[in-house]
Image 1 (cartoon, rainbow, N blue to C red):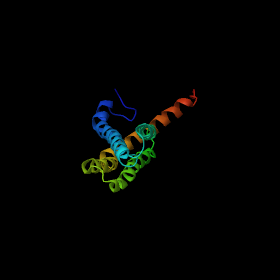
Image 2 (image 1 turned 90 degrees about the horizontal axis):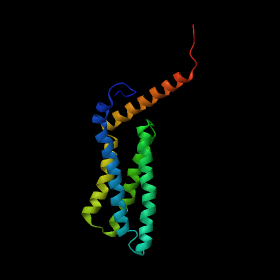
Image 3 (image 1 turned 120 degrees about the vertical axis):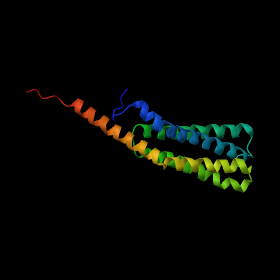
Image 4 (image 1 turned 60 degrees about the horizontal axis):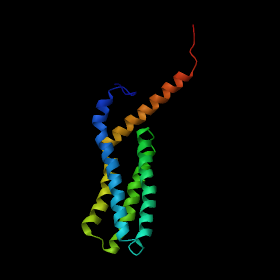
Length: 155
């Protein structure tokens, strides 16, 4: 099976799928640690039903942002990396002040470490290479669509 950008899909996935999935998983784990800490710090005085509602709303905001950003990266949109980076920065910024509530230190350290690892992975050489190749594939796809839309000259 060939990739539009030349080369095989199997080789492309073997090289870049692990780094992409690690980014997605770090995003999911960042959100889950953030929200579990938020439930025990920021929202600890709320009734359990209201706390559950806030957790649900937060999930309905965080997960689509992460999914949209990663889907746009796959589609070759260069701006999408800033959506995912903003997601990780948001998780980090919302987690950092929780130290004032004296949360469990291991969970807190883990909640700080996950978005930092996500940002580090976004800046890794392999992730940047993947985004460059996906951008190249997008440009080639656009050229093919444009060429297919033009009428052929007959001589």
